[in-house]
Amino acid sequence: MWSLCHALLASSFLAAPNPAPVDDGCLAQVRQPPPAAAAAPVPPRLATPAEVVDALQRSYEGVRDYTANFTQELTNTAAGETTRSQGTLYFKKPGKMRWDYRTPEAKALISDGTTLWIWEPAFKQYAAQPVSQSSAPLALRFLMGQGKLSDDFTAEVKAVKEGLVALELTPKSAASGVDKLRFVVSTTDWKVQEAVLYDPLGNRNRLVFSGAKWNSNLPDAGFVFAPPAGAREIKAPGR
Image (cartoon, rainbow, N blue to C red; front, side, top):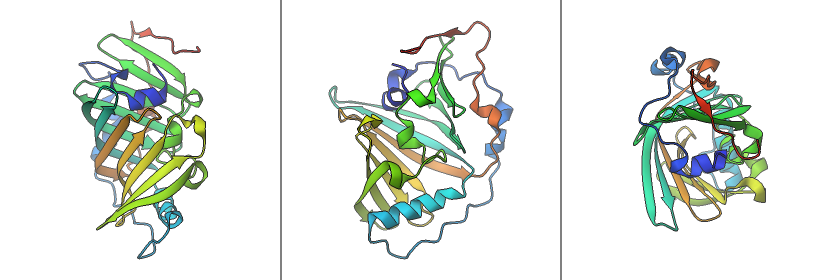
């Protein structure tokens, strides 16, 4: 239940009506508009998946941290159901991330790059596990400043529209827990506008990003979870 892959591919991994009690000031800097990130130089017309992957990779090399609002749609294929959520995500190199959900229920997924915490404030309970035991970082570590897309995935350009490229990525490792990953990328600044993850059962996790900010000097304190007094730890499988 508590693997990162499951947490990101199933909306039921948390349920809480109140936001996690963290220091609001520790991530306050993200509210300050950062200097505009320079777009990576790219060829005027990209003919091959390798060129698209290279342009995308280079555009993120100068990004130290990243903040965006997200809308998430999780589709359970077998049940024919889709759930929708909204919140704010934060990434910081190397390997740090935080997902703060606002609707329909507040919940938090936090990692300092070594440990993953899942926090349920309504029940005052949390789970923790090493990030190394989770499979989803293969799909996300590109945004977290780890690894190269060309090392982890084979790529195919599935669609090209005005100002957008859809890039379909298939993991080279069968143990990734992800069947395929689809990025919709702006050809203006070569940043990801939308990401869709498919698991081996055909379930879909669609994330649409907006209001993105880069290089806001996010403090490390925002990527660490300190259990409040009285919080109960739920042991993750294998621990």
